[in-house]
Amino acid sequence: MDFIERIKNGDVLVSDGATGTNLQQRGLARGEATESWVLNRPQEILALAQSFVAAGADLILTCTFGATSIRLQAANLQDHVEAINLRAVEIARQAMSPSKGFVAGSIGPTGQMLQPYGTLSYDEAFAAYKQQAALLAQAGVDLLVIETQFDINEAKAAVMAVRSVSDLPLVCSVSFDRGKRTMMGVSPAQVAQEIGALAVDLLGINCGRSLEDNLAALKLLRAETDKPLWFKPNAGLPKLDDSGQPVYDVTPSDMAEQVPAWLAAGAQVVGGCCGTSPSHLAAIAAVIKS
Image (cartoon, rainbow, N blue to C red; front, side):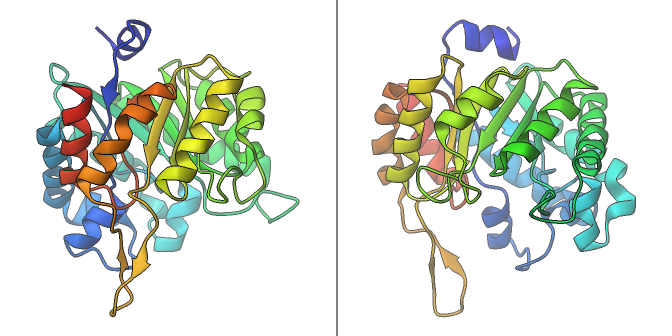
């Protein structure tokens, strides 16, 4: 069955864990774009993806979170938009064959503020999202995931841009990093009403704050929509160690204990965001697949 058929069938799917924090464990420097490794160290990207598949993931995301032309400018990679997006899908497909599960094209925020709060225009954001979505679709992803959104207008631009070039299954996931609101003040109810009214197949929550905060946001979102829900919370909130590196102290068993509550609150695709290692994911998958 394809992705939407699995969702309509009521199946609970396991997504992958974190990309950035796990690549930092493999040597990615703080501030270094993960997408640079798609070109320079593809075997590390592949090894991480394979570890999530081995841990029980039914779905993995491409290493393209920051691969819009706008966001790649910060890493001086804006001339490699096509190469990065196409190669990232190839790598993900090496790890996850169609017979095993699904590859989702990751589309993160532009990293800039839309007008009137910043200088980025709606049309510029739309064009960047349109370009990336077209490349990911061309490369053969099974679905597209707009993730870690916090500005309702940017999220809308992303959805409309994707839909201008693709009819693939589409997830739009929001980060409630202020607990029950995003940094721009967007509530779960607003996501349900404004994003849910667009041509999206699943609404979601990822990143955010503590497990407790994310669960509270999930319950609020479920109360406002009947769309299937995507849920990838952080492994708690990070603390800085003596060297200034972020450390996530939620253990795999801590995370696994929360899974029944996530499912009861309506999550149908479950994984983890920052701090979620393959070990965390294996513990999550063990609960879901038992």
